[in-house]
Length: 101
Picture 1 (cartoon, rainbow, N blue to C red):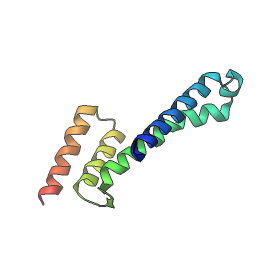
Picture 2 (cartoon, helix red, strand yellow):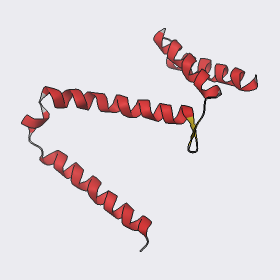
Picture 3 (tube, rainbow, N blue to C red):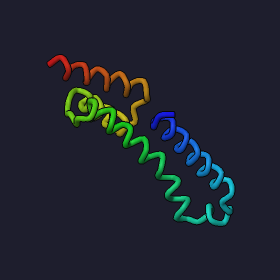
Picture 4 (tube, rainbow, N blue to C red):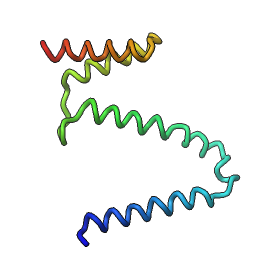
């Protein structure tokens, strides 16, 4: 068994234990305002980091290219309450224009 399999099994065990502890945690602890606030912010932080990694990196390098223009236009479109398909079209078009410059 190589190191990759050992790491996979250990991380799987840790994930299982965390999930089990989540079911065994008393409800009084989970209903605290601080825990509720932290739980509401976790998806936002994860999605933001995913967008940043996908928009600003190639392999292991940080780059600024046409994808950032598309992200900027998408943010403006969402701020102006554009619907999702329109926002995606605007972001793709602006990214393509900057790419072809």
